[in-house]
Image 1 (spheres, rainbow, N blue to C red):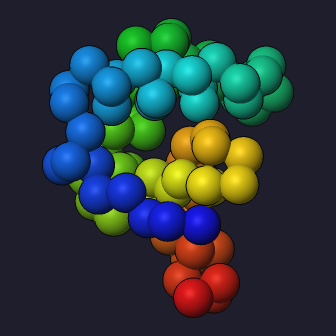
Image 2: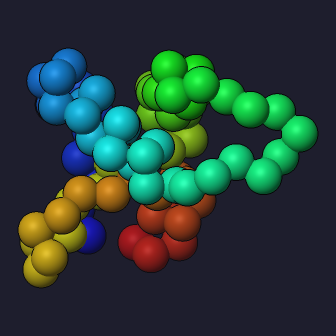
Image 3: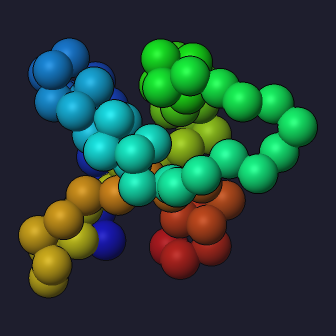
Length: 75
C-alpha cells in the first residue's frame, strides 16, 4: 500500500476519488441526513486535516481512502 499525498492529485481527480468513496458508503442510518455535497466537503476536510489518507494498492491498481490510524499501524 502506497500513501498518495492529496496535493499530488489534480483537483478533478481528488474530487472524483472523494465522490467515488462517498457513493460507496451506502445509506445513512444516523439521526442526521447529509446531502452528497455535505459529505464531499466533510471527507475533503478530513483529507486536508490528515485524518484520512489516500492509498494506492499496486496489486489491485486501486485507490482507497483510509483513516490515518489504520495506515500508520500497517507501516
